[in-house]
Length: 72
Image 1 (cartoon, rainbow, N blue to C red):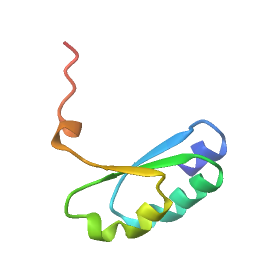
Image 2 (spheres, one colour; image 1 turned 135 degrees about the vertical axis):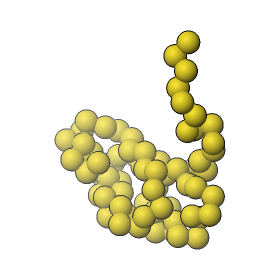
Image 3 (cartoon, helix red, strand yellow; image 1 turned 30 degrees about the vertical axis):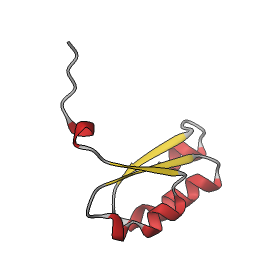
Image 4 (cartoon, helix red, strand yellow; image 1 turned 180 degrees about the horizontal axis):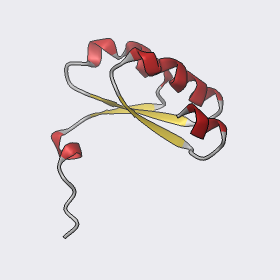
């Protein structure tokens, strides 16, 4: 994520995690003007404070996000 942000290959990073270990990478992306969207899961919200600090926006994950893609 940091590589793509610093080389200008992305303008938005989408993080689907509740692990605070990714917070430094999110902070770095924000420092180089790359938006960071956070997808939250129910039950993980109390652990997401640090991630929310560096996210430019967030939304709650819904079961529909994880349904198989139907190309028909």
